[in-house]
Length: 98
Image (cartoon, rainbow, N blue to C red; front, top):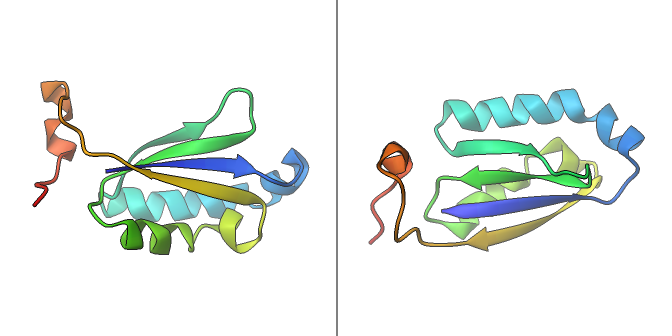
């Protein structure tokens, strides 16, 4: 599983120019069951996405499709972690780790 921290590197007015296409990007990966949760950071300096994947390469490929990435309005920090404890309501999102 991965946390993707999104940090805006352009003014919010520039970020908002790409917001609609970014939401379309998010929808694509929610439909594929790759994204679990996403949202804006507070204060609004970027966002965060929880990604259901076991491959950093896959997450990097996904991020490379984000209009924020393509248009260089954000930078990304990809943090891999292995959940070892979680609420039972979260179990549908868990993948088997080899």
